Structure formats: C-alpha cells, structure tokens
Length: 360
Image 1 (cartoon, rainbow, N blue to C red):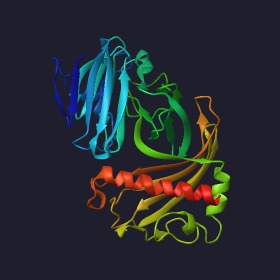
Image 2 (cartoon, rainbow, N blue to C red):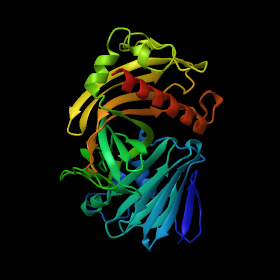
Image 3 (cartoon, rainbow, N blue to C red):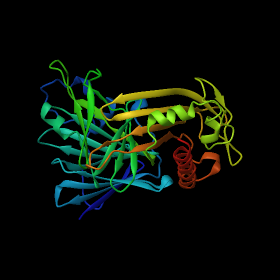
C-alpha cells in the first residue's frame, strides 16, 4: 500500500507523482472539449467565498487500495481531534496537490475530484468536462449512514452507524460560464451523491461542491419538534431550559441581543432567526445565533440548534434529535485549544438535551 500526505498545500511523496499543469480560464472550454480539466482551472471556477477555511495543520493522507485507481483518503483536523475517511474509487489516479487539496483525475471520463480537510470538517470539489464525468460526483465514507435530516438553510444532518455526525452544507454547482445549476444530494448506504441538472446550453467544465462540518447530535426520544417548540416558547421557560448564563426568560426575537456567558467568558450573541420545515426528510424546528462583538468565537461565527425528526436509512425506527451545528472563526476561542473547547461544548449541549428530555 502506498501513502501520500497533503498538508497546507505541500505534498510529501512516498511514490513519484506528477503535478497537473496550469490551464487558462475554465469557462473558455466548450461543451464538447476534450481538454483535460486541471486543478487551476477548477479553482478558477470557484468564488473565494465558497472555499472553506483550512487550518494549516490539517492534512489529507492518500493511500492506494488494491490498485492505482482506488484510494483511501483520510482527512485530519488535529485542532478538533477529528478525522474523516473517504474512498475514491471511480477510476481516478492521484495527481498530487493544489492549494491543500488532494487531486484525483479520471482520464476516461475527464473528471476531477479535489479533497481537502477544513477547519471544522472537509470539502470536496468535483469537476466534469463532459456528461459522463457527472457520474463521478460521489463521496463514499468508511461507514454506513444511519439517518439524515433537514437542518434548515439547505443543510442536511448525517448521522453514521457509529454515532458520529456531520452537517453537510447546502451544495452548489456551476457551469463553465459561472451559471448556477440546480443540484441535489442523494444519500445511500455509505455514500453521498451530488446530482446536477445540466441543461443542453451549459458549458463545461461543470463544477460542484459538497462540504461538511462536524456536528453534535443527541437523542431526545419522544420529544418531537412540536413539543419542544411549544415548551421553549412558554413565558419564562427559555432560560430554564437553555443552559447558558444570560439567556432571556422568554424565547428571543429577531435581532435581540443575548449577553451570554460561559465560565466567565463572553458568548454574547444576536438572535438571527427561527426556522421550521416539514419536508420528506422529517420535521425540523430550530433557531440560530450569530456571534456579537467580543464573542470568544469571533465575529462571523454562528451556532444553530435544530430539533428534528430523522429520516431513517438503516431501517430502524425514527428518532427525535437535537442537532448543534456551529461555525467558529477563531483558532483558539478564549485562548482554549479547539479540541478542549469542542469537548466542553459537547458536554454543555448534552446538558441541553437532558433538560429538554426532562421538561418537554
């Protein structure tokens, strides 16, 4: 078995591989082009705001499995002591690295898959230079999916059979002219498949992106979204259940300032929004906070709480669960290593789930 590691844009080689060359603007490639899609041309199609932040210490370890066209990919985020294992087995060869992404190319379909560990999860960028390449827009994990649920804002919560959870962000797809294409995610066994609707007048390459964050998920048993919403909106109940000092007695309103504190640290937030959905993946009620000035997570950070009914893929009965999904800007919130911070957050929100189970 051969192994390569991509770290902070530098690759340490255990075998000889060649880097892909630089191409001109990707939108110059016509629909029927046979020119190879390169990492540079793929990244040229992606606006800067769609590239997720990556910790310089994060890495991608690539190992050949069985053949040169099947690879085991390990994404490591040391700051969170988290990792994700993926299999790239669509006939792609490993072609080196670009800006911290491990790059795989399928010569037959002329498709490119680029994988990178992020600050709090991972990102995959797919690119197809022909219709046949669209079939390669697939992620295979090393464990089966237990259930999925709509977390609002286009995000989907995915819980694996080992109890770990990720929040898959709303996917996007664009053609070679930068036009937005309709795209959906499909979940099956151990795989996430991104389907893209490509009209006849679209230009190639088609570029698409599923990204995910590590998330927390807790069983609420029979406490469904209806019950929890009714409880937390009762006068005087919000602060009794939400386990953070400074929480208001009543359920917050849009743009309300929340002077929250944990262990003396500033967790001041603004209440952004409340959301409700009743779709095929289950009912979902929740709300989102944004970090205010002085918050230890940093301006631009958010946290979302979702009470959901899950859609089961494994055949087990459905569950009601609390999902906590955060985006944190600072590398060391309040000077605390993120791994320690993560463990404290898990314990705190576990207490939140316990209060919901006790009250609702």
